[in-house]
Amino acid sequence: MIAIVDGGSTKCDWIILKKTGEEILQTKTRGFNPNNINANQIPSEINKNKEIAEIKKQIRYVYFYGSGCGTQENKNIVQAQLLKVFPTAHIRVEEDLVAAAYAVYRDRPTMVCILGTGSNSCFFDGKKVKVKLPSLGFMLGDDGSGSALGKRLVKNFFMAKLPKEIEEDFINEYHLTIEETLENMYHKKDMVNAFFAKFNEFVFKWKEHSFIQNMIYDEFSNYVEYQLLPYEEVKGAEISFIGSVAYVYSEILKSVLSEYNLNFGIIVRRPISNLVQYHRKYIFPQLED
Image (cartoon, rainbow, N blue to C red):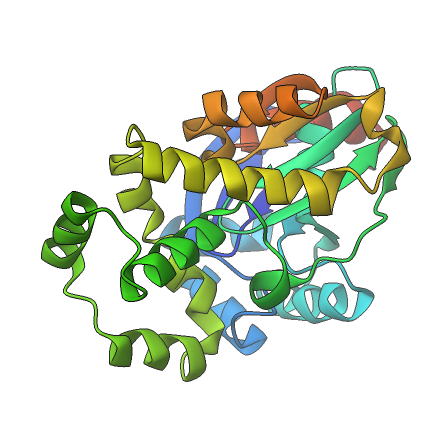
């Protein structure tokens, strides 16, 4: 059996298949970003999933594509933990950008953009993933992401910038205190991005309001400025997106790209299905029986 895993900071989507491409099961686990959690928790989190636990000894290949796996050190960390669960499997760990590139590939070069809990970008020519910029994570990067939108909303709330009707609804919804916010920021650092990302549900609720629309527009403009324009390929390439944030705010995203005269491609909300199709076509035929 072969496991393909799309690993975000919040959750991981798993699909288990036979080498013939026949699907065995789809399931989920907690996200395994090694920058945000203690990597030693990975085996126990996987083993909590009874469906995986029942067939783990039959899995011969694991393709794990995860947020936070952009450095060789983090790849090695995640691979070592996966080996504890699948000790006889061939395990390949790549960053989530590789999965995104595979998921949006349509037989032509493209800029690949992740807009989910976090954000990232790369250029994929069909063979190689080109990463020109570092992933700066929640504190310095993640422009346009769910966590960035949540952080911006919370900042506007505490600094009394929200319109009255939005402020009142926010108070009734969350009863958020500055003490709780600072506790999550400085004493629960392993999940701080997820803490702020959860407020994106509220952003979505008010997405028709001009104040929120401008906030989203500004965040997407930051994404273009910091994560797309530095690539010389951006002007001629198709620009495609992965992630729920890109999906639910697609009209605003298209407006931002139009403002910069950039070529919109496609949006894939959940890359796992497209990722499986890529493996069936390009990777499975190369595997040993």
